[in-house]
Image 1 (tube, one colour):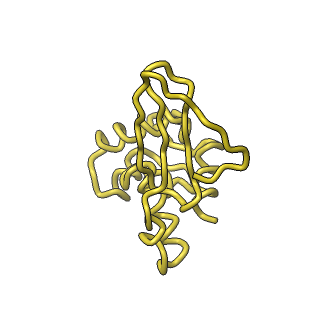
Image 2 (cartoon, one colour; image 1 turned 30 degrees about the horizontal axis):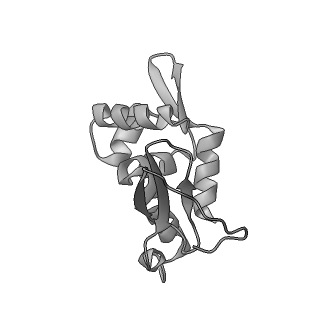
Image 3 (cartoon, helix red, strand yellow; image 1 turned 120 degrees about the vertical axis):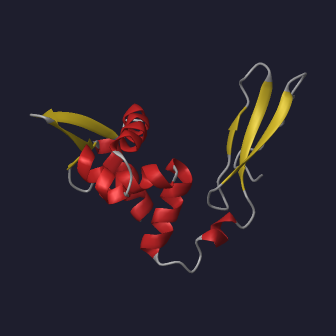
Length: 138
């Protein structure tokens, strides 16, 4: 791994955990502070080739789906404007209970919020949700 400030670290009795990740070729994440193990996340070789040659919109959708899963990425992407749970279920071609399940996870991540309007529940992207869509749309 290249490092602007190289150093040596003694693992002691800690285990080393290597974690492959889908990312750009120069990304690395690590944690040296845990008592039982040290982990290093590294980019899978040629992972960026999964998206090379794809049009930018398709590449962004694939990358977001890799992060959130296809169902949740689709839901988040479809919320450019607020929508009801029923409308989301129709768009996804599934039952409302499946949408509720995925919305629970997206809400826990702070990417959407629910708003009751009369008898309907509307789903809206949060600022964080918009930011993640913008990040993958670049």
